[in-house]
Structures are given as C-alpha cells and as structure tokens.
Image 1 (cartoon, rainbow over the protein chains, first blue to last red):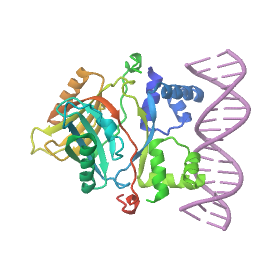
Image 2: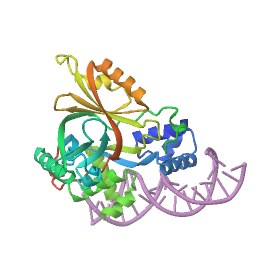
Image 3: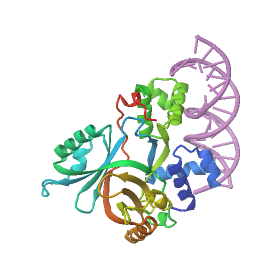
Image 4: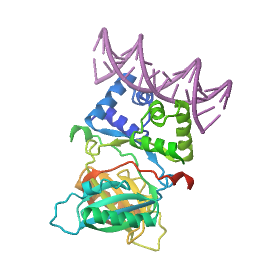
Length: 156
Length: 156
DNA sequence: GCTGAAATTCTCGAATT
DNA sequence: AATTCGAGAATTTCAGC
C-alpha cells in the first residue's frame, strides 16, 4: 500500500462517511481515481466496512466489562467463540496468550444484566469467568497511524 | 428513543455508509424524515460519528495486545490517559475496577514494537504494565442489540 | 491507473399539513 | 414530526489516454 491509499484509509477511519469529493480534494486525485481506490481497498479487505460510533449510555447499555474466560475442561475442543456468538451483549471476542483463553468485551444495561450474562457465558461455553468492570473510557476507537512499510508486505 | 430511532441506530452500526434512501426504505419513513432523525441522533450524541473498519493486518499493525497499567506511586495524581494520548498505537483506554487502574488496547507492527511501546508507556505515565497478547480475533465490532427501554431513560 | 464528462441517484432545506 | 418537492451535490460508469 502506498502513500495515497494510506491517506485514504486514515481519512476514512476518522470519518467513515467522508464523500469521494472530499477524499479527492484531500488526496489531490480526481473523484474517479479516489472512487476506484476506495473500491479496491474494500475488495482487498483493507477496508472491511463502515460503522457508526454509538454512545452506549444513550442506547441503554451503560455498563461495559471485560470478561476473561477459561475452559472448565481443558481437554474439550475449544469452540467457545461459536458457542458464545449468539449472545449479542458480546461486542468482541479475542483469543489471547496467557492464563486465560479468551477476552470478551461486553456491554450490558446493569449489574444484574451482567450477572445474568456471566451465567449464560459459563453455561454456553463451559468456562469459568473473571470480570473486569469498566468505570469510564477516556478514549476509544482512535484511528491508527499507518506506517510506510504497511502495503509493501501484503498480508491479505 | 423509540422503535424507529433504534432501528436507524442498528442499521447505521451495521453499515455506517448506508444512504438515507435505504434507511428510509428499511424504516418505512420518507427520506426527509429519516434524514431529520439521523441529524437529531448525531446532535444528541447518540451517534458520535462514523468510521471505517480497518484490517490491521493489511496496514502493517498485525499485533494487538491488552496492556493493564498500575501506578508506581499510588499517591500521585492520576492523569495517565492524558500522558498516554500522544501514543497513537493506543487505540483505546478504559479506566477499570480491580487490581489495575487502566486497560489499554494497543496495535503494533511487531513484538519489538510492542516492547518499545511498553517502555514508552511506563516512562510517560510512571506505571507498571501487564500485557496480554491477542492471538486471533474471532469477532469484533459487533453491532449492539438495542433494548426497548433505552431511549426512555436518556443519559445524555 | 488516471481524467473528464454524462447519467443517475442522493442530500438536504423549504414549504406544508 | 411527517410529507412532498426541487435545486444542488455526490455517486457511479464509461470512453479515452
């Protein structure tokens, strides 16, 4: 990936609804050229999609927590992500190195809802849980700074 | 917030570039009515903005980690988020309950870059760090399911 | 891979109910 | 708060380089 693609990705990370006209102005390219590049970035999977950043307090999910899980039976096949996918309170699931096997990021309405969710997680995936409650979030979703060598070592 | 606003937020969370025309079709409202509602949701801060979902492997930041930090001097004023804000590798910073004070989500190019980042974090915020490396991410950025009572208890 | 232009579709405010 | 309508802007495709 070179300079202009990096610029485009950075701009779209900051404003996912930026128009092609504005992207063209910012990059010095024609609207058509930018359009073509964005479509190619989407097709290549560099840009996976677009999303609105939502205020979870405003939609009734003010409580965020990180839930680390560990299998009860370490010999059992590990399909925890599949078993948990139906729980919409789980925003993200990361497989991690260390004492536990996954870290889940969850959003719920209340402490009671969290308690209920934890029981569902334990039951669905046969795991023990360790929960860290988020008190506040100084920042989140910051746009990445893309290095110059990025596109030269294509991973996808 | 009522039914239609919830629907709009959910749709925009799934596709942040969905046109007003499509939103109108999905909600059964006129284009102008949807337009008006989206602008109001943005103004109220329910929709904070829009962003492209980026493949971090493709942009040269394939290594994700969670870094928990703890102050070396618990009596010192806690301004760690401010002291760390300049480090662009830090995507998110959450203040948490528990043994440690913050959990940072970071994206770097390599193990060496992570090592370097950890040193910068320790030096900038006078903290100790505990790092959990992400091996893979089964899912992330899933759209929230918005409860019916959400808008009736406005937090913002 | 870029440009410029044409055709289509979308945005967004004004007037109205 | 919704609707219709219209002007202006953006999107998208395509021929040509």
